[in-house]
Image (cartoon, rainbow, N blue to C red; front, top):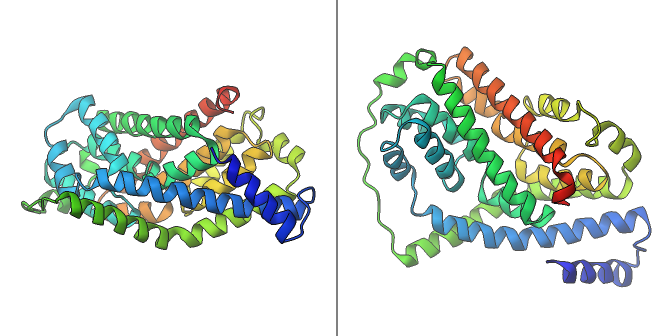
Amino acid sequence: MFDWLDYLVGLFVENVLKISMETHLGSGVHFFFYDTIKIIILLGIMIFAISYIRSYFPPERTKKILERFSGITGNIMASLLGIVTPFCSCSSVPLFIGFVEAGIPLGVTFSFLITSPIVNEAAFAILLASFGWKIALIYVATGVVVGVVGGILIGAMKLEGEVEEYVYQIKVGEVDIEEMTHKDRVEFAVGNVKDIIKRIWIFLMIGIGIGALIHGWAPAPLLAKYAGPDNPFAVIVAVIFGIPLYSNALGTIPIAEALINKGVGIGTALSFMMATTALSLPEMILLRKVIKPKLIGVFVAITGIAIILVGYLFNGIAHWLI
């Protein structure tokens, strides 16, 4: 898809910067410029497209849609809506309260809370740019599956008593849903592109910079030995290290790309990214305001195990993905 860009960046590095592509420096510089341009192009396109779709699903409408479903259907709908609904750590508490107040089952609520941070338009765009459509689509699918399965298990455990009592007493009330015209939706999508890129560009530059260093200088045999798909414990270690960290997934994807190019297992790199996104420390701290430690522990354990299984799945089908 981006062979033309690879060629032009190569000419720029060798003819303008006068750095040989055969050197570590040339390889790293090429990685930095190529990935930066490639990611920004796809990021803009994907954020606009998904934001236009997202304009039909403000939080109030999402809540109303989920009120209509129960059982496994509710978990599936919650995870699917999590893909196109804005979510970050700072919105976890109000969304949780709104869902509980609306009578949405706890398991369905957690299906949304698990999938939404893992799968978003920016992460999908960068995955598409870095790894291609196969990995991007399977990543989205597995993110939904993790949310559905995690929500079903939490719902089956009947942990409603582990929600802080005051949450059930809050009455949010009805909120009018503003109808948007086609022009409004386009303006919303354009504004979202500008806003997201403005907020994440520093993470991208840092991530791409670290990826460039790994691409140019990291010893491939060593990385492949300890974090390659043949190491049966690599995925588990990656998730354990990823859970307590706070890292923007958009900045970790270029690092994951560089690691995979050096021989690290696809599942190992992506499971680390999913763990840092779905189980970030700030989200756990915020969720503690509305749920008790036992439920947080169950949430982390179920989601962490599911992500580990996804990591092994990716490693197992790596030959088909590449």
